[in-house]
Amino acid sequence: MRRERLRAFSAGSHPEGQAHPLTLQVLESAGLATANLRSKSWDEFTGAGVPEMDLIITVCDRAAGETCPTWPGHPVTAHWSIPDPAAATGTPEQIRKAFSVALQMLQQRISLLLALRPEAWDRLAMKTRVEQIDQSPSAT
Image 1 (cartoon, rainbow, N blue to C red):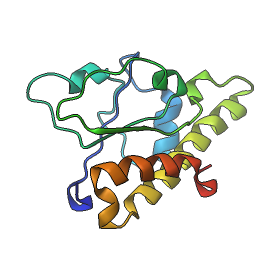
Image 2 (cartoon, helix red, strand yellow):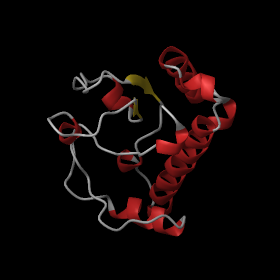
Image 3 (cartoon, one colour):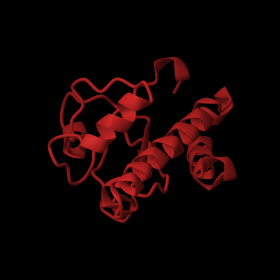
Image 4 (cartoon, rainbow, N blue to C red):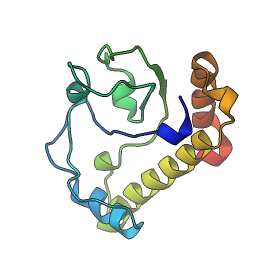
């Protein structure tokens, strides 16, 4: 896998059908595009004609314990433990903060992933390095 051709997709095991309103607000506040975002099932990426993935990263601890689909091309899989902001409780400000923290954690870990040297993109090395990103002090 080469960084020049990275494309990211997001999906989950239990989609709601629409993106959480706070997700959209926090993404927009961070200057990220939200047009046409929706909550979608990971099943959309398992059939014929789907993009072949090189790397699958689960981020919700609940999903890490679930049986994942058999992905076309048998990509490397790893898990980054990010608290699910949709499960946050408390005041409206505390809940919004949970969404902001999740975005910050993802941005840090994605930055570390993109900073990997080309030799780290080898299939075997990639799994180790991606899992190490989850354990990195700067990733929390």
